[in-house]
Length: 239
Length: 221
Image (tube, rainbow over all chains, first blue to last red):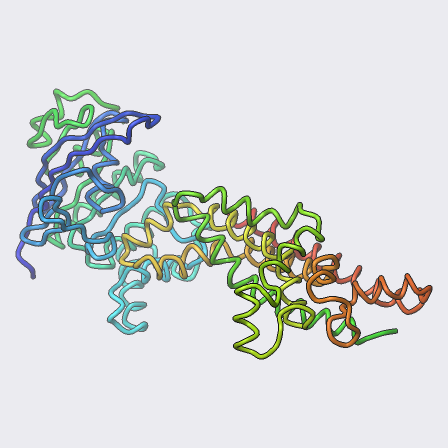
């Protein structure tokens, strides 16, 4: 079991001059093991923050580090490419590969130093754990919303990530399903002992999932702390 | 019926297709994925063969690869044979009309792949190469194959540029479309009719498959 490490993020980012949607981000956040909720209205910079942590967009300045493992640091000229950050990202659209079966989707992210058989075995085990083992040989086109969600989560967790980033992953689901999945994700994150950052603008989701909450407004941190302590005073969608 | 010109056409078009597929998909990828100054200008230059008169195009190619040009001279010193008025010249001529068709299709197909899927591959530990070959390329395959097939059909039918660069040497560079022209000019229509039929059926069959491929793509999305 690796030592539990916190993800520390410090970002400064401005839209290119003349950009259609001017924005600026300037924030410092820390995410210890457990689920940190990134909460705020649309346009507050939640998704951009997540993309910057992953290395999908490049901040103008800042630092991203998991403990002493530095992913990005403008002062030291460090910028590790996305695929070397050892993270998992669950996109709002899920981004399942349409030309691969569920098992191949999940196996895609598993360490390639392992044999193909071993990767497949782990993929099937994770699908089983997410309760969608019966989908293993099927393509995403045939999945229901909840099934696709579970396969996407299996794909994220199967690679034993060091950090999990979730960008409104449950937005397409009804309330009951969402509740069920929230519990599964929270349990898995706790078991892996890793930091997870989840973007949402649903108060209930924040309440069920979150250990901590960071509220963003216009690219700045407006509040942070314990979910139960902060949520009552925060405006947001009640679903 | 004359089989030789048809076989020569098939041979020339096949070689041209291999060349245009390799360079065309690479160029399509460059235009689809990379941002660099002059990108749209490059696209325009690549598209130009679709609208320029074959004689004008042929003239440019002659200037570029003729015996007195740098490329032509280098080719001749390496292979001992000239590019113009040879079968290699015929392959080059057949490639020129097909190239923009392959580039355009490849660019459109590669651009149509949801960038989030490529980003997802990267977050799952795939480097840029693996993400390209396992996600972007397979998802664009239908459109790319359709473009390559169109390119093959175009190569098979080339007339003007072939005449300008490779000439009309029976048995060496006289492809089916040139042989048809010669036969009609010499009032030997019976000789031409078989080749006309084969070229027509091939073109229509290819277009039919291309349409099927494109329709399949829409379903997949």
